[in-house]
Image: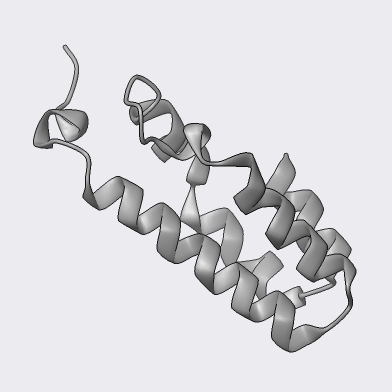
Length: 88
């Protein structure tokens, strides 16, 4: 899993403890059919995040991580209400 790899690479123990409760995989499954869902993010966004972590510059990595989360939240906020309806 990409995010687990990034956490391991970055060595952030606190984030590693919090991340499992976020359940990103559930959001991906729920929103998989929509254009702006998490899995359809711009690959450049992931490269920026990865490069920032690999730079070993904590401030840069934190800024990149926060920006990634903000962009993802923005994509989710733009989804129509029907994206969150229960199937069945």
